[in-house]
Amino acid sequence: MKFSTTLLSLASAAPLVLGFCDNEDYDHDILNISPEEMKHSMANMRRDTIEVDLYYHLLVTQWSDSNNTILDGLWKQIDHMNAAYGIYGIHFNTQPVDIIVDAAWANDIDLDKAGKGALLHKGNYNAVNIYAGEGFGSGVCSLPNGVDSTDGTSTITEDTLLGDGCHLPLSAAVNPISGTPSHEVGHWFGLYHTFQGGCSEPNDYCDDTPQQAQPSYSHETITGNVESCPVLDTCPANAGNDPVWNFMDYTDCSHEFTPQQGARMNTAFNKYRANRQVA
Image 1 (spheres, one colour):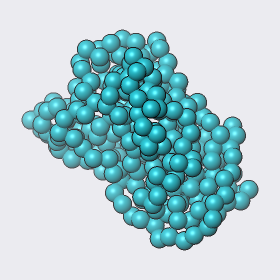
Image 2: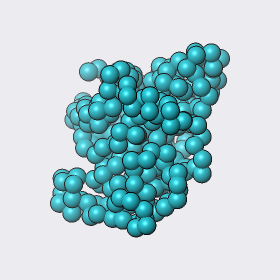
Image 3: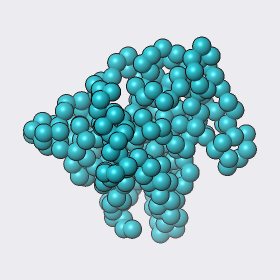
Image 4: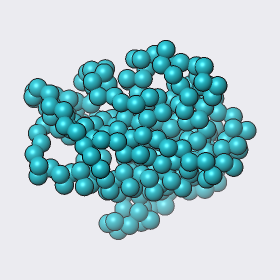
């Protein structure tokens, strides 16, 4: 695997300590994905592989050859993502990695997002760009623009393209077993949090993720064992325990998506990302 280095002017900034994920929750499906579309994707997602170019931009305060161990962690994390998404017919093709030395950008997730995108964003609307900042305290990722592009005629603006992508902590990007990159990229593919809507339907629009009243914030009781988070049931009137193993919850034990989440990701990508052109 290759990487490129981009040097910018150095500046200092204090880290922002934010929540786990800054994506908002919705009281309706802004992507308007129908049950029929989900059923079609469910039947085809293991047969037709979606190939997605993956561009990582590492925002750091300093860099030296000794930091190549960070890249080793990144490659393993990408393998971790491919294992999780590959079950549902999605594969990430790793592109050359940018390393940007800029203390201000590295420490503030909200600082000059437009400038970051204008300088660093690569690929079209069907390529995922991940900005991993050394001092970022949370993650956030853009959902697809909800205009059907299956016929190849719908367009997006250049600003929408350059603003598309995910921001997350560098520590998560280079942790071989972190679920944070898969969580944020799940939003990029059109997934919502499993706790969206609490104990009331329709929640995250995936019938096989049990309802949960709030994020679980579950922690492993056995270090390194993703099956060891305590069982929770915050919606006892509804079937199933909280999905503490799901990437779209907030939990140490996240390690998988459900089949309906896989179908939703396939549907959203093919409907809103695959054929989108820039106006």
